[in-house]
Length: 148
Image (cartoon, rainbow, N blue to C red; front, side, top):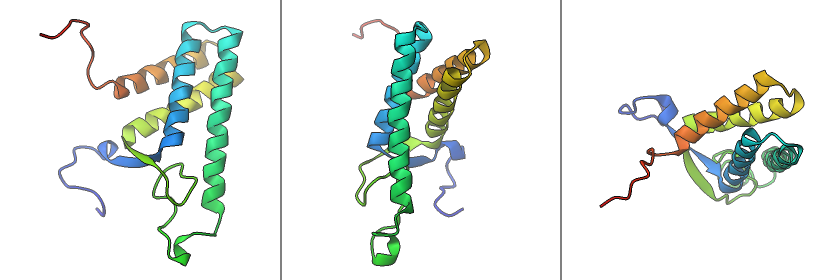
């Protein structure tokens, strides 16, 4: 009820604010996952692992910021947690549909599973999560034909 508009078709269409660095790190994971899916070599597996480690560092920094009592709403600053993944009092944020955020989370989980428990089921789950997120990020399929 609060903060929701009655004209919204689905709660998944509600936009959430996400820290731009977190969004960047997730995009790097998606690109590394796509490359690994195209060619599951040891080098591309390592690239995916490196991207996931960078994302883990970013989320750890956000968790540490959230846990820090200093500069909280008690002291007259805006409340923490208004931007997902924020690591400072004045985060740069990007609005994303909640459904995209959920698809990103699914991709990250699938990528971690594909690396820790390699095999056809986790590889297929990663492929599915990547396709799902890619379809959400692409506003319209490109016909490949020049307009005009």
